[in-house]
Image (tube, rainbow over all chains, first blue to last red; front, top):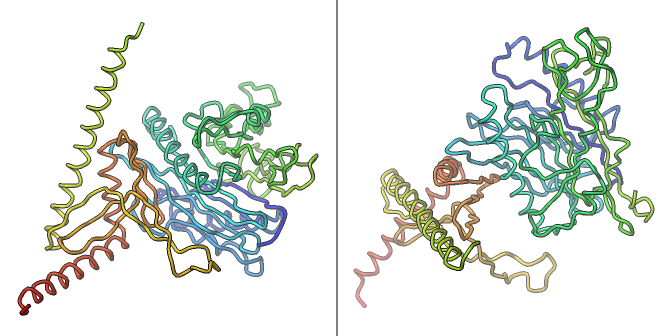
Length: 312
Length: 154
């Protein structure tokens, strides 16, 4: 494995709903494949986490000649199998271990997500990808399910950190189906300083930095008339300026914020953002381009050795 | 203001709850074992117990042929003569939440209903199917060997 930069992306493709007609699904798949290819070709992504890609061979979406890729997806064939998947560029990252994590809310199975341990040129990296239940059908039940999912996912992450040490960098990406200010069950903050200053009281006491707060921002005054707007990562069918939601999150462990005097992987926050490429975002209509309803998030981790860089 | 008596009452109640959780867990395991025995035609028990694992030392270690023991809690299916480990289990002192890990899966169960669901999922795994077939084969052949040994003159 080689490289001092890991460009990553998270995206809910919207491809999975079983209600989608076959012909529309083919069209949707072709469009989604073009977006993923572009994330590889134009953005140089070496780690791509996707949601709503149940039973899709997403590794085939990347044109041959664009590196060697490994796909982690749920191949169990269970009725309620996981719809998240992870694409890994094996020239930069090596997959060491993965776990599909679930929780049980009463007797209901809740899909919490995928946790993988990767080897980079500079040691291990934990990556989690999650797609949690939306409020669409039963908001109260959905919140309980999301909290169960959070508990299960953090449990697996904590097991990994107990093996690898508390300093192991962790990147959590997901469509958590809540805004950053509604996120329950995952202790997180929007302040880098608070996250850095947090002193863990136990192995499970992890305070995450949630970079997604920044995606909430709306700069255009909202009114009942049509307004050009981009204030989130998801926009459904309602045609009002307040339709945007920030359901897609990127959370990182404190280590990824850098530590003075230490070398390590660092989240390059200036390179993290909602990816508004023409293929996926319709700027004229201020919404994800049909058939999509989510926009990808693209970001970068960089290996830093310089003390001043590490303390940024 | 809380008294020492109040604190003790809490401790007694917590222990009662723990005992009840253990009883519920054993009930589920007992019910599952009865059903499994009936499917496999071999008498089995299912237990959550501490087992010893032998892990190879680091590659390149001079003593690579030796292994260092470590202790883990596991879900064990046991016949009269043979046994197999179906999953690793994180069993806290208060019993729940319990985490079950098998193949490439990890399940957190907050209560006994959740544990039943997780156990169902373990049993549905093809790896578990394979382990159970091996267990039945070993159980049958070991039973036959024992029978033969009992017949042969001392």
